[in-house]
Length: 483
Image 1 (cartoon, helix red, strand yellow):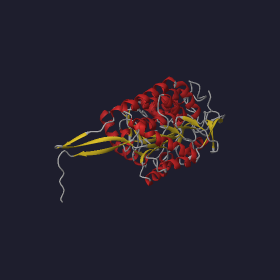
Image 2 (spheres, helix red, strand yellow):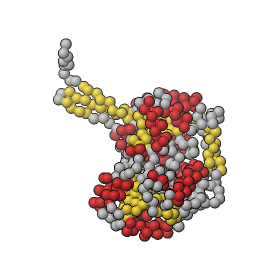
Image 3 (cartoon, helix red, strand yellow):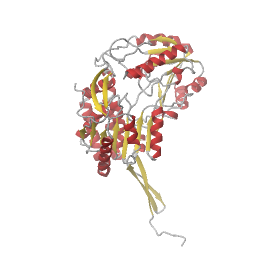
Image 4 (cartoon, helix red, strand yellow):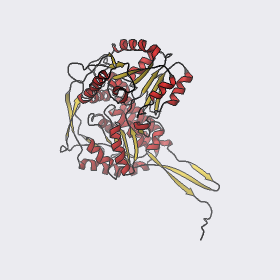
């Protein structure tokens, strides 16, 4: 497959190149080889993208929601038709196994385009009767939005931000992570092929300084970031300076509570999905697994047996179920946390090592006897490292589960329906799960509390974050004044 894109950027409906920008090598995580090179956006490229977006946005906003939605739904159909090629590209970009990308990435992006395309025509205001006077509201676009993506789900995030922005009548400029720059270009290409007018979905490459130049530009009306808490703080502050609308989808150190009556196999499935899917590189992962003391050893024994079934290898092989980390840097960070876990007295019960050979492979890793004050239980690792903690009392485990600066996700496994909903209500997290983990359908809001972010992605809730309400008061009679 051709991995070198036609050009680094997609602006005003066409590929655009400017080789005077800083070169960014695209590394295939399975081999460590350079598979493409793109160039960071120069100030001229950034200005070109913003100018194109502002020029195109007004006519797009003037179209009916039905007309906008038709284009988004057509793009969704094209994405599904090309799912294989898009999944292969996602695997090259991220290293995630094709077994995973073929069902979770371009398909999720297509779902977002279809969903927001489907509701674009329903974005109406309301009529408020006040005696013989009345008020009506109009839902209007914000203008030009900036999306800043993370490297773990480059296709999905490009659509999760682009679809609601476009449905509401905005233009968007998307900056992918410099680690995974390839997939968003294909999203832009497909949207344009589906009939999206030029200038409405632009992609520019670059590192932090390119993102900063976009966020601080006075012509930008909204910023949506998926990334780490430290990055979020910087972007939030910069956006606040310009009083811009903001959505922040940041990190987590999410709890997963397994009660003594849980279905063990389902709970272990949840722990695997919440720690080792995408080699652990998922912001919502339930990396603090609180297991009731009565079933802890049974849980650990069966978990280790099932982890032996992980097929680690070439991510392009459909049989492979566990791929490399996205980069050597990310692998080294995760391995560093494993050493901290050992040093602080956690019991290593599975994995713990890098895997020899090409690429950035490491073993899925499980620590038991983890205490709340250990580094591996406090800090986001963003790698395949699970911490198993003991508990006996529900009130106690709820206090411990919520004792974190983060609040992205949380999960509970139990057969007791009343307890399940009671626990979910007490979780201080924006996205919670009962007897499952990490499901993220576009129909449901996704986002965090506390330091894990502000705003929501997906569902009707996202419309609130990509549009604004205008109230119009209509007086039907004469207007009195004091003089």
